[in-house]
Image (cartoon, rainbow, N blue to C red; front, top):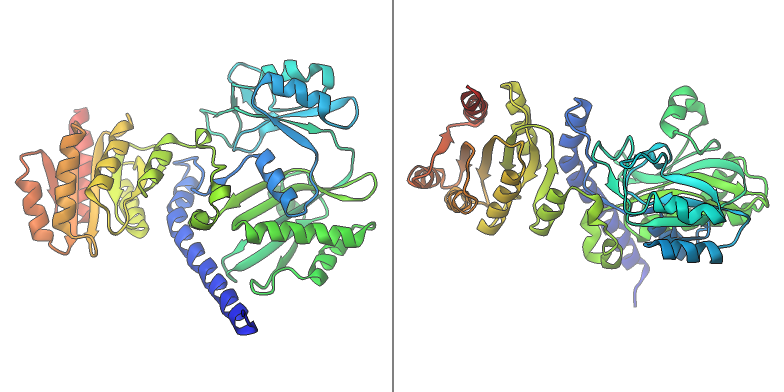
Length: 443
């Protein structure tokens, strides 16, 4: 029999898991944010992201009200959806990509806009210009994203639009609600121009969102009809957030229809990658066609990889060491091509795969390996580096800095390999040699 003490222990463990997950994710993502601020990269942080139609189905499963819609993989599916979906003479035809700004995006074929409100008779024609094409938005990157699915949704008659989001707050290691009575627009711009219109509510991770808190939010959002139902809708969104291991659920807009009922008209959901082991059905929704294929390949071998725009490939163990390596490369005039963390106990197979990913990038003109041998012994990693360099037929300068357990044996293996591997005494020496190798190659 599960008693009250067991529930308390479970809740405390859940809180501790959330803090640990947040710390790990933060370390992995800090480098990306830092380099994004410098304008060096424009990539998404590694976390499961699902399409709009998938998010709508998930929220509906937990009781949230969403607009009726049908996901279509072919034009025949679109034609059938138009016949079966309810509503008036018009439907909404939406491109499904994992990037924002779809409505103002441009397709590679020149067609403008990834979201259209059209007459039913025109839906197939409009979809034909979108399905199978590449949509480029402000958030997709210059290469755009492929549109493999079209979401045909009922056009809703909305009376009022609001904003509602739940995310993880690092300061309290618990959920934080951010809401506003004004939605359907950029919440970031609203926060700057009218910060008083932003509603914030921190939630106890053990108690969750209470009915009283939901009612308070409903009142602050200015709802006047069906208040109990509206509170239940907010509780359904919180249940989606908790039971699906979300890191964020953003509903923009959270709207009222003409009868005053609340609808999650459009939503974006992100999920904690560390919860994959207990969210297998959810993670099976991952659309790898929307991701950097190098990141997809790296994840298969439990490598943390994020592509950047530089020309010096980095292979490091530990997020902190990776950030330091990227910083010192730039200090000496270079530019990192990636963030690649092989972890603390990488096997030879993982090292080989890491080298394959690095050398597959045509921008990489040199590779810097910076390993601190704690759990991972330097002689073992050195053997893996030599084997990997031979397997991939390495044709760019390779600079290796080892430190820690069995470092002397590791350096002997590198020097005795018969390969042109440049060893370094410390991180400064390694970064300078990596940057110098580029200058020598260009000379």
